[in-house]
Image 1 (cartoon, rainbow, N blue to C red):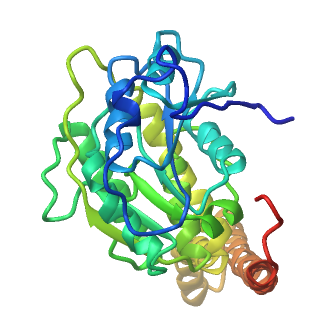
Image 2 (cartoon, rainbow, N blue to C red):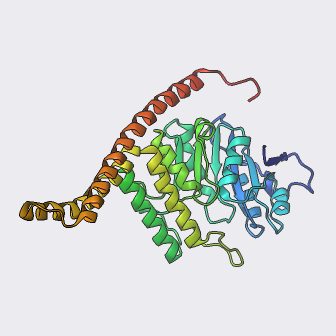
Image 3 (cartoon, rainbow, N blue to C red):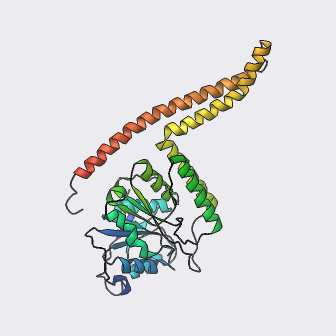
Length: 342
């Protein structure tokens, strides 16, 4: 069942529906591409109005959507007054909101930004330029590049650096920020990337699946500012950190099965060699096997290791075939003309 309810509103609304500031017209990038600003929100009444107005000032002709995720304050009212289109996602979690945004919004370029006012609207032109020029499928506003002047809490920065190191080590990359909530996408990426996670691990899923599926990623520096007084982060460090790490490992298993299961297999074989070596040495010396449990343990670990490596080879072969199929489907989608009115 479609759980996102979309409300349509534009800058021709009555004064009671849209403020004058929200419909200010300024110069816009020289492109006929449709741009959609999509903003996931949960209890952001203090900041959402300014976020909508700032992006309206930068991109007057863009459609701005605020996707409310069961807010208990005046987020919806403030966003509507600022001139945003309102949508509702009843499943609680940022990941579900992103799924709804990607499913229901039709555009050529998508800009995703948090509603907490910590990302600069003025950077949106740099963010969408590689997408408009056909140079990238996803552009990330990196808070951790050398030129970025971001204001992080200590624990958040440690967590970001840890998860970044894990992903770069697993996938052999040099990304600088995998958890940024400020991103731009082209239509092909949005309509073809399958999202499954429901919480704050959605940025991790977006990054890893983009890498695994061969999409082009570009990073630009973006400064993260502190939340205004009275505004609070919704991230639960331990809970969400565990979900992010679990997501990384699950996607590592799914997209690099030979490496994942091969590493598990080699680890089991290595463990099995420890008691196995002791048993073999004693057998050579005495001709007996006095440590039968150790021998059984060694054989079991070594066999488990080989089974894991074999499973990795089989799954790797299947995954490659599905990747070939997905590539053919993507080529077919590019060659198929869009439906009239889409």
